[in-house]
Length: 87
Image (cartoon, rainbow, N blue to C red; front, side, top):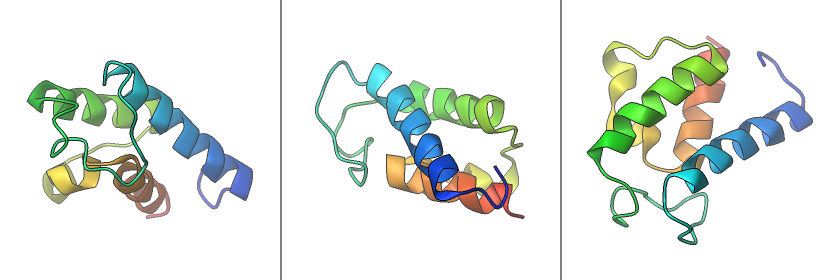
């Protein structure tokens, strides 16, 4: 998805949103909601979202990338993936 089109970016966000939705038990959420602060997910989800990100987008999440802030909302995950794919 490096240098992707607007459609690719929308697909990326939709993929992330679908994954998150599967893990929050049907709760309503906005893309900017801090998923950990809302209590929708637990610490196990942090591991799952990192693994999902690596597997789905072909990224290696290591070192400073492992900051929980990168994975706290759909918006932040999307931003992290976009930046990582464009390195």
